[in-house]
Length: 353
Image 1 (tube, rainbow, N blue to C red):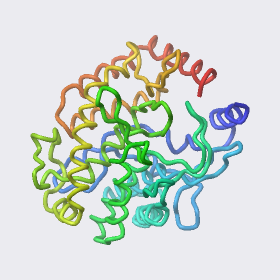
Image 2 (cartoon, helix red, strand yellow; image 1 turned 90 degrees about the horizontal axis):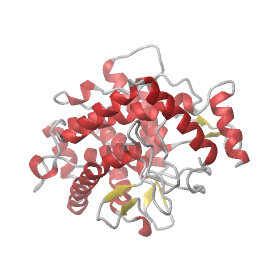
Image 3 (cartoon, rainbow, N blue to C red; image 1 turned 180 degrees about the vertical axis):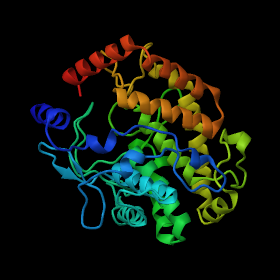
C-alpha cells in the first residue's frame, strides 16, 4: 500500500505531468462519427490529441505513472491516442502533433506488440503491476485494451487497406469471445449475463466505462450487412458506410463474425439489464466490486459515463441509455450531490484502491 499511496499522491498532487494528464480530458460525443461514410471514432478525444508527451522515438505515447512504475506503454492509451489522431486529422486540426504519422505509429505498435498470453490467445499486455481490487501482476491484459485496440486497427485497415491491420484485429478479437477461465476476457455470471471485463480479477468487478468502450470495439468488428445479422435483431443502428464495412467483413472468418454478433447482443442486453446497479441514487458507480462500500465514480468518470451512455443510445436506439444519462446529468448539476460524491470517492480510495 505504501507504493500505491506514494504513486497516487505524486500523480494527483505532485509537480509535472502524470498519466492523469492523458486520461482526464473533457469527454465529448463526436457528432461527425454519426455522419454518412464517417470513419471517425464516437468520442472526439480532442484532449488526448493534444497530449504533450512523453513519446517514444516513433511517436507512440508513454504514460508517466510516477513512483515505482515510472514511464510505461499502455495499450489502451496508445489505441486512444491513435483514434484521437485519426479524428483530428480528418478535422484538419492544427497546433499539435498529428497526425497521420501518430495514427499509423499507434496502429503499427498494436500490430507489433500483440502477444500470446499463457493460454495462447493474442492480447496486448500491460508490463507493470497495477493496484486495484486485486493487484494486477505484470504481464496482465484487459478487455478494454482489446476492444479499443480493435477499434483502431479496423479503422487503420479501412484507411490503408493493409492486411496486417485486419489480421491483427481478427487475432485480438478471439480473446473477447473466450471465457476468462480459458484465457479470455469474457465473464458469464450466474444470471447468464455476458460481461467484457476491463480488469481480470476474481471475483469480477464489472467496470462500467471499460465495458462500454469495449462494446464499441465489438461493434466496430461487425457489420449490419453481415449475412444473417439485421439491425432489428441486433439492436444496432446503422452509422458506418455499408460499402466500406462490406469490404472488411467479407475478409473475416464467418465463425468469428457470428461470435461477434452474439457477443454484441448478449453484452448489450447485460448492460441494459444492469445499468441500474451502477446508480447510487446520487451518483454513478465506477464498478461493482463486492466490497462493504460502493465505489463512486470520480467527477471525470461520471461525466464519461454520461457521454458513453449517449453514444450507446445513438448506436442502439435504446431509451434506457438516454434516460440514465439524463438522470446522471441531473445528479452532476446538484452541488450537494457533487460534494457528497467527492467525499465518498476520497474515502473509498483511502480505504481500498
